[in-house]
Image (cartoon, rainbow, N blue to C red; front, top):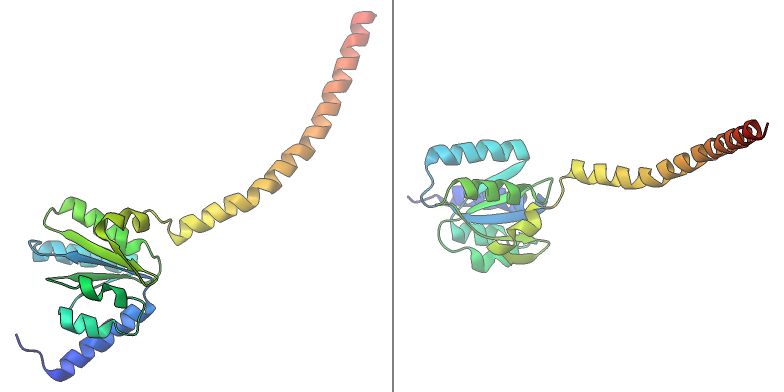
Length: 176
């Protein structure tokens, strides 16, 4: 189906804006996936703040120019869905990895982060990154650990004194 020039420009501008604000992108081949499954994937993506784009490859190549995702240019071959992570770099990778487990026809082609193109075998590298909330929790635990240890150490001093006094008392009672 032919697309008018104005529509092509709008698509390119939209994808360029999305790519400009994204932290990572994951590419996948969606052939063989039903439209119902794709609708479910889109709903999950919205909940995770992942933007899914199905765009003609030549328009996608134009749209990613000037962004850190120019490295995916050679990988844009065949039907491709682009999943842009907007807040959490690992969100798109986790989403598409889980979807690929459920649907055999869905195949991850590759991903890009920080201007570096990685193969589909590197999906775990990105998918296993902690979410923002998990990272903040880990930071809080690491920050809190020294304070907790100091409080336990300071609390231990009176306990030791009490045990020493009790031991002296017991010795005096035995001697008497």
